[in-house]
Each structure stands twice: as structure tokens, then as C-alpha cells.
Amino acid sequence: MALTAASYPPLVAMLLRRWRTHVRYLLLGAVVVLALLPFAVVGTAWDWLPWTVEAALLCVLPARAAWPLAGLVLVATATGGILQGEDVTAWFWRVSATGIDGVIVFSLYALAEMVSRLHTARGERARLATIHERLRVDGELRGTVDRELCAIADLLHRGAAAEVREAAEVARRTLARIRATASEYNTGPVYGAAPVRSSRLARRALLGVLVLQGAKTLVNVAFRPGGDPRWTLLFAPLVTGFIVLIMGRPSGIRLALAGLFAVPIAWPGCFLVLVWGSLGAVWGFFIGAAFAWARPPRSWLIATGMLALHGVAFFFPPPVPSASVMASSLISDLILAWAVYSLSRLADLVVLLERARHELAAEAVARERARIARDLHDVLGFSLSAVALRSELVLRLMKRSPDRARTEQAALLELVERARGELGSIASGRIRLRLRRELDSVLQALSAAGIATDARIETGPLPAEVDTALATVLRESVTNVLRHSRALKCEISIIRAGEVIRLHVANDGVRGAEPGPGNGLANLAERTGGSVRAGRRPGGRFELTVEFRSDPPRFGSDADGVDPVAGVQLGGR
Image (cartoon, rainbow, N blue to C red):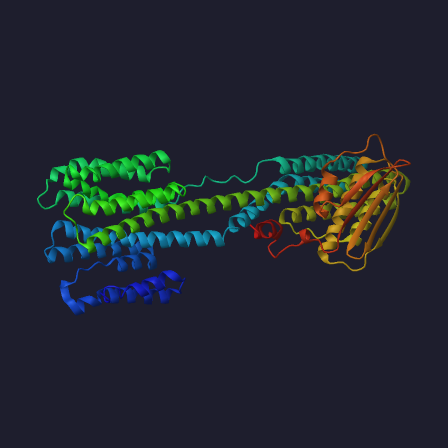
């Protein structure tokens, strides 16, 4: 008895850890050697049941080699039974038990590995989907906005008044296109998740176990000593119907029908015809389905009732089997119930994890599209507004001061090239603006619009992420001044007070109604965590105050630029 269980420890060790390949092959060899060892002690008198060998082969080797070798194990088992002259019932029991046990262990192991991999890589699909969306948006923007920026640069290179005027018009049209694109990215369709289906491995394994157990039942009926093989004509459709019900979609009605197929015929039907009791061999599947499909305490009541009924069936009707046969039957019920329940629950878990991965990917892409929309509006919107304003300034200077007009035109070309560079960085998520440089740009834009500006910056050294955040917020604030006001004066101050940085922009050009909540203020709130105050003040002034900590977490980035979506947001899921 000790020898028959000698192959269990290396098989258990193989399943408990993810060993390196050579260790797994050594454990496989140990399982095979120890499974054959009893032959050296008791010879062919040993009733070989090599399910551990089959399970080890399926768990260790690639499928291409594992399944043919597992088939050879079954052939060897069947051949050994024939050579020993076993009767059909014992021979088929040995072959089917080897196949059932091996498939159960392998399928549960493979599903558990699948669940572990899916859990570990739950954010991988989101990361890949985010990268794919960035590439798609980058190609889309380069095919539209970048082409128009090139056209603006070409018109400015020509230098004539008509071309400069046309460049200003193209800049305005491009600005309108960017705003429409940003709105579309905020509201348009996102990553479409493929439908998630139940695990094929679980369904195939469960079907295989059901078919083998059902075939074993039919063989027992057909070759029962002193029995009538014609009873298989009744049992074949009953077993087939039972299998169809267990393999169907879980429901209370299917569970009740499966119970009607399996229980009344086996007991008390066996009082009418003794052979009908053979159908009790599938009761384990019914118990497993009860655990998988019904909630406690109903599932426990069904399981307890079925096991108790099986115990009663051992004694009524007689003859009463031996204690070992009783124990074997009850253990078989528990193993089959455990297999059905475990396969069902692991398959459900695979589906849930796959669905979660798709949902995380959809969420990641939605966040990425919102981020791109925000950067398009804030970063490129200002550049194109500045191009349009400074083009008009160049037109005015052409008659009054040609030399200064040429200087402004050269600076304008640099601004267009800078906008093209910013366009490329928007899709990649690697925008790196600098506050001091941005202040020079906004002062030039305000000057081109005829707005006198008083600026003050007292922040001291800042981390690169905070510097970029301040530069971006300054851009959007000044863009709002240029778009929504008729200002003659503008005040800009950026002051650090402890861990808080306060940006204040005020102008005297309020026109009409106070601007409502649009993309600009919404973007500022998103970038700063919501600490934005804006409103009308006495004397026709409009003031905007933005505050955030000097170390805001939302401006971090990792090496591949995916951190804000696939790292921070998904890391805690």
C-alpha cells in the first residue's frame, strides 16, 4: 500500500510551486519511476492505476507531446488489463479511472495557473491598449494637425502679406479643429472589449470526465453478471440527458431536472429493478452542481441529503456491500463533486478576471483619451492662438517697421516648429514644458494682443514635474484671457508659500456674461486636483487663482510614459 502511494509526493511537489524546467522534468521522472516501482515487488499481480503518471505528463510537458503520451498511458493500462484476463467491467473501470483522475488533476492545475497569470497580468492589457491608443491618435494627429502646421510654416516662409494673412486664417481653423477633436476624445467611443466567454479548458475537462463516468456506468449495466444488456437502451439516453443538463447554463431548473434524471431511478427505482441502482454512480456530479449552482444553505442540504441517501442505498435493498466498497463509493461521490465544483468556480473566476482586464483596458483608454484631449486643448490651443495673434502683429508691422516684422516672423516660425514638437509629445504623454520659457511665450502673446502685463514669479527651484504643471496651467490661464476678454492689462503672479504654489491671473477685460464652465477651467481643475477659483470682480476684472501642492502625485511619469493610466490608476485595483 505504501508503494502504491509512492508517486504522490513528487506529483504534489510538482503542483505546489512553479519550478524551473529541469526541476519539473526531474519530478516527472520521479513520478514515473515510483509509479512503476510496485512491479518490482509484487509483479503483475499489482492492479496498476497510473493516473499520477498521466497527470504529471499533462502538467509538465507541452500539449503536443503530453496528450499523445497520456494516450499511451491509457493504452498501456488497457493492455495490461487484457493480458491479465480482467473482466470487461473491471478493465473499463481501471482505464476510465486513470483517465478521469488524470484529467481532473491536470485541468484544475491548468485553470489555477491561468487564474494566477491573469491576476498577475491584470494591468497588462490596459498598458497595451493605452499604447495602441497613443499610436492611433499620434497617426491621426500627424495626418491632420501636423499637415496644417506644415502649411502654416510654408506660408510664413514665403513672407508676403497675403501669405501671412492666410497663415493666420489656417491657424484659426486648426485651432477650431483641435477644440473639436478634444471634445470628440472626451465624449467619443473608447476601447471596445471583445466578448468574454467561459474557459474552453474547463468545459472540455468537465465534458471528458462526465463522458468517461457515464460510459463506465453504461459498461457496468451492460456487463453486469446475470444482468440484461438491453437495459443500456434505457440508460444511454438517461445518462446523455444528465450530461447535457450538467454541461448547460447553470440554473435552478436545470439542477432540478438533473436530480430527476439521476435520483428517483437509482433509488427507490432499484427496488423494482436492481440494476437501476447503477445510475447512482453519477450522483457525485449532481452534488458538485448543487454546490456550484445553488447558494448555502440549500447546496449543503442537497449534498447532505444525497450522501445520506447513498448511505441508505447500500443497505436497502440488499445485498449489503463490504465496508471498503461503501467507502470507495462515498469517496468517489466527493471526488466527482469536488471536480465539478472546482472546475465550475475556476472557470467562472477566469471569466471574471478576463472581464476585469477588459474593463481596466477600457478605463485606461478613456483616461488616456481624456488626457490627450486636455493636452490638445491646453498645450496646442495656446500655441495656435499665439500663432494667429502674432501673425496679425506681423501684418501690422510690415508697413510701420519692416525690420521688426522680419524679426517677429522668424520668431513666429520658431513658434510653429515648437508647436509641431509639442504635437508629437502630446500622444506620447511626454510633454515637458518649462515655466520660465512659457512665461516668455505668454508675455509675447499678450503683447501681440496689445495687453500690458505685469508678471512676478517667486517659486525658487522646482521639480521637473511641478515645473511642467505650472507651465501648462499658465498656458491655459493666458489662453482664457486671450479668448474670453478684451483686456488692456493683465497681472500674473506665481508664488510659493510652504508646500503650496499659488498662480494668480487677473485682467480688466471682462466682456458680456461671465464665462461658464468650459474645457479650460475643467482642465485646470483636473490638473490641480480641483483647487481652482475663478470669477468676476468689481471694476470689470476677472481673476483666476489656482493652487496645488509643490509635489502633486498626478504629474508623475514612468519610463514608458504609461504610468498615469496603467500604473497609478490600475495599481490599486
